[in-house]
Amino acid sequence: MTRRSTMPEMVGGVTPRREASSPAVTPGSSRTRKRTRSWAVVRPISAHARKRRGSNRLTVSPKSRIAASTALSDAGGDCTGRLECRSSVRRELYHRRRLASSPAGAGILGVMALDLDPGTAALGNPRLIAAIVAEMDGGAIPFQRFMELALYHPEHGYYRKRGRIGRQGDFLTSPVIHPMFGWAVAGWCREAWERLGRPSPFTIFEPGAGEGHLARAVLDWAEGRDPAFAAAIRYIALEPNSPGDDPRVSWQTPPAAPAEAGVVVANELFDAFPVRLFEATPRGPAEVYVRWDGEQFVEERGPIATIDDAPAEGRFEVNPAAYPAMASLCGLVERGAVLVFDYGYPQEELWAPWRTQGTLLCFYRHTAHENPYIHVGEQDLTAHVNLSELLAAIDDAGMQAWGPVSQREFLYSLGLPGLVEAARGDLQEYFTRRRALEQLTDGAGLGRIRVIAGTRGIEGAPPGFEPLP
Image 1 (cartoon, rainbow, N blue to C red):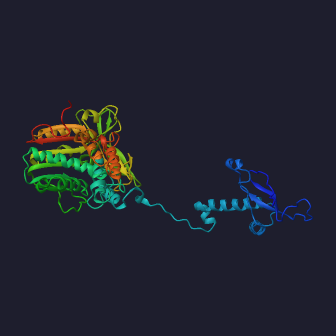
Image 2: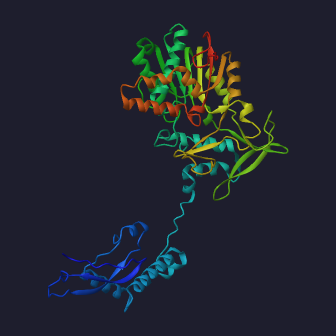
Image 3: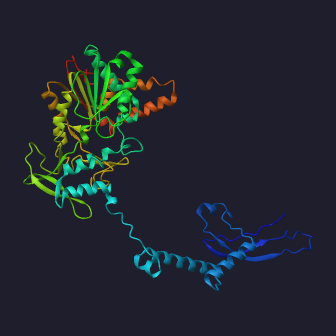
């Protein structure tokens, strides 16, 4: 039997340790026990280690202890206290690092510190920033123009780059979550096709189609569900920025020639239009202008504008392109419908007295913030849409206006939960669809998108807009 000596419990430091190097003396034995005295550095004992006595002990061989002692002596001179020697070495290294980290200290130590300031690259795309500053020409431009350049500059604008949408991009849209959203839109379009008498060709226009996620899901659903409907479809994607490559889609740039029968589908189109930004003052709404101060973009107040029913306090946006764009979309089909999904409110809610900060938002790597003057050309800029203007444009175009309803209400009304239940035989797909349904109908996320529609030549309320019983 071999005995082991015990070591007193310490918070930290150095303690003598006795270690048995030969069998212990037993009754009747004439052998004596050899003892060696050495120093061991003990780490602080945690509360958990105190519960298990001896769990924090350090076992060091004699040769290792001699080597450690020699290293400490070499580093700190003739030190009799090993801990004091080690502490002095650490203090010296610490102060040298701090000295080297400062410009003055770097010179003392003979280290050359570099100026690593990235300049305008810290604010976004430096080429886009240079183009914006050049247009300012020492003055200021309206915020609307700044937003237009940041998003749609012909070479460096945000919407000119690919990979904006998706989990690796800056934000998610409904068609990217799951094809179920596109299947629901396809079913809605098929119902319009049926009510119009199954015309062929039946043109589906999608302005702002992006890379074609919605188009792919609609066409896949049509081919898998109704070959006659699929054969009648002519899908036109109006995308001037970074179009997709689905060969079944006709990729065009606006304007497009009108069709005799069809549907126009716009998903999150209007909230990406450049907006005029105003700040309420005692004299009236002052338009916000943007200038370059030599280091960053800053705001200043511009001229006073006259706007009917404008908020008396805070900031608000005006989307001057929304009404004419909606009127243009209604003119794309002689008979048929328009279906619009977008973030927005009726005017009385959009300009409510309590909404004093406006709705302008920036999206960068799935993080929402309110500073449009950073990540310039690398982030999305959006503002909620005045749905009252869009509905007025539908009425003025001679269409019957419907809505708004929330995307949550719309998708539930169309029966999207049934697609989830239909996948119960495949648990992996079932849970994928169930998670997608939760995202698409989340009242704090995509589910709060508003849906409006306009119809011409179609009898009755379209699916999703039927009056409640």
